[in-house]
Image (cartoon, rainbow over all chains, first blue to last red; front, top):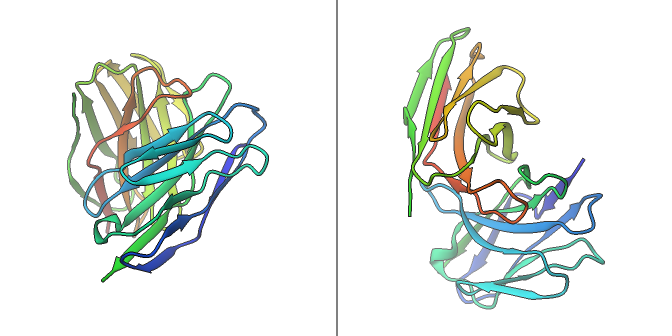
Length: 114
Length: 114
């Protein structure tokens, strides 16, 4: 079945440094929809950004990601980390046939320190 | 806008007990989901429902039952609580459940089994 693989565990960064959280996926469908959800402490996950278009950069709230079907990747990036970016980030894949089901990766916790 | 409410916020049970978690949404969304969130394992789908009285099993459905009595509510039952089990159960909804649809999450129910 479909699967999503993310940077494992915890990523720690100093404020001001660039952020890159890796996400790769496996699916038999040629037109997947990829999502990044963010979950801050004591909150529920919420959508950060999503994309369907190959090689097109998608941006939201300072973060950006580009879907590359050739490498099955959808890495999340930000040029300069802020303390408020500390959160759990999930990459997710929407199954092509019939929709409905979304497969989530195991999550990457980002901790930004001063 | 809308909101998803989950009750109870915290649930402490005994081994072998049947426990019920409830979810309500006022988005008027068609599709609703139950996920289990465990540290390092991401969000795993337990059940989903694409309309009132519909139920579809996710990858983690064993040990759980679900009920969608009306469009706005979706219940999850742990059929026999396992000793020392500790997890967060998240309810979510999306407008139709289509491939591109964003999922909106509730605040979660935290389960602890003694």
